[in-house]
Length: 151
Image (tube, rainbow, N blue to C red; front, side, top):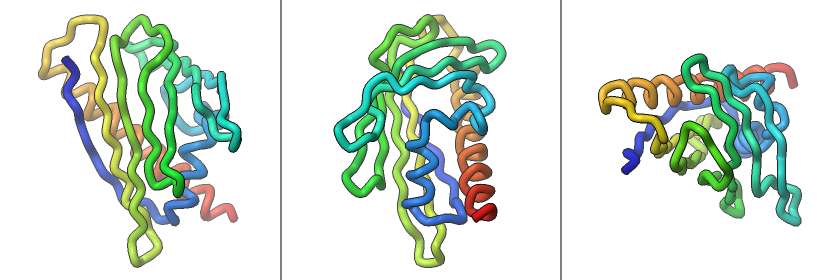
């Protein structure tokens, strides 16, 4: 059974700007260090990705998998789950929740639940999850804030 982990970060941009970066899957290899390739497999009628294939290389963890995405109408929540074959994962569920703050920043809460196909001691799995989440949030923050500064 998979355990769920949650972390939050404050990003110096509006929820709309953060959501735009999160939903721009084709550009993930430009800023998400472990993501080598991304292919939008299917889209909804509104143009948002419904299924996305990722190729990941995080050193010890190398995998290719397909995630199915769903979005809140106002894009304050983006959630996904594993639907495609994966060598390393039995399941994956995750979400980004975006909350606008009065000062114009956004609190992003990242929740991730992964069940690996390979055995890993709980202590090491939790450390790996923390590292993955820390990196993902830090890279997202850097991308959003750099993109905002370039405007």
